[in-house]
Image (cartoon, rainbow, N blue to C red; front, side, top):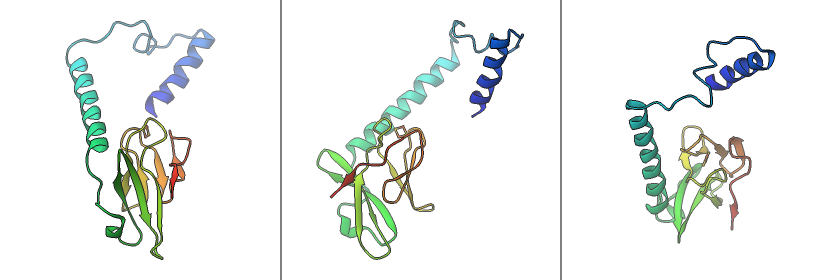
Length: 144
Ligand code: FES
């Protein structure tokens, strides 16, 4: 959000030909930063890759849908993929793919808000898989 605001101010100044002290900091042809910034960049991306692999390769939150209490969701393994399963207050089970349609991370159940959260870029889906917040612009794929 901060950088979006900065971009709005900076681009407007560049279009109008006004001097802006941030123009060198955000210049696309600026020199890359070496040292700690690169180390942090590499470590952060390694952490994301580890989480991604762990979510895809690990077991589900529960081993069967029968273990999901009412008004709760859980991720189940289904062969090579994962299912986001939600049991409503009447006991009916609603299932959709746990694969986020943005870039393929596995969503996690957020019991406090009763939604599916994507840990990668913050997309959020309602209990039935509908998009609440992007960047995902499609619902989780429904499953039978
Ligand atoms: S992969 Fe889910 S928000 Fe990007």
